[in-house]
Structure formats: structure tokens, C-alpha cells
Image (tube, rainbow, N blue to C red; front, side, top):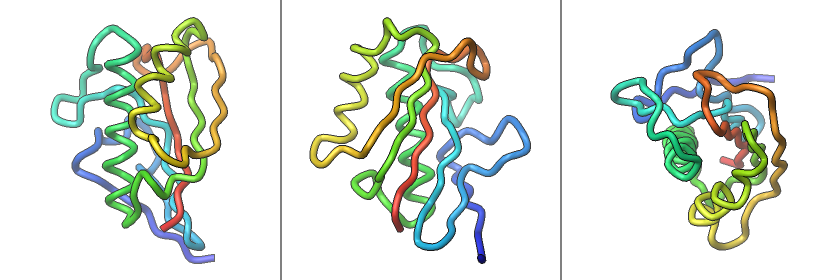
Length: 126
């Protein structure tokens, strides 16, 4: 199956051996994004809402670089450092998916890259 990697200058550069996303078979698979500022490479804010907003901004930039859009996201997985942050994360998340929100899983994890509070990955159709 042919596949193509996706790169966006509007998202932070990968901090490991992975692509921003991979396009294959009409889908785009976006790697997990944390709240890194694409210009500075530094984590934004110390609160869950700020980091969620930036992580979703990064996802949006990558999805658009792949030729898709946030309204074509079919599935997200949200990784939280602390499940007590679910409410405020959910408020910010909801502002990106007002109509027909995608399927989603949310789990608490022990630790995230760069000690982030949240990481979000997505699958969209092109």
C-alpha cells in the first residue's frame, strides 16, 4: 500500500523518529501532539486548557497540511497526565469539534513527552 509522510511548518518538529502524519488509503494518521509552540519548541502554559488548545492547534495544522480539515477527523485519542483534568480539557476540546464530534478515547497515563499534561492523536479522512 502506498503511503506518504506529512510535514507541517505550522506544527512543532517531531522530537523523535516519527512523522507528523502519514497519509494512506484516503486517511491521515496524525502522531500524538502535545502543547509545544511550533515557533519556540517550548511547552505552552502550565494549565490543561492552554496545553489542550496548543495540542489541537498542532493537530489542525498537520491535518490541513495533509489536505484534510478538523471537520473530517473521525477519531481522536486523548492521553491525560491526570484524569482530574478531564473537565477543562473537554471544554477546550469541544471548541474544536462543535458539530459532529469524532469518536474519542481518553486515558490517563503515567507520563508524557516533555512532561506535558495532555497529548492528542487523530485519524481523519482526506
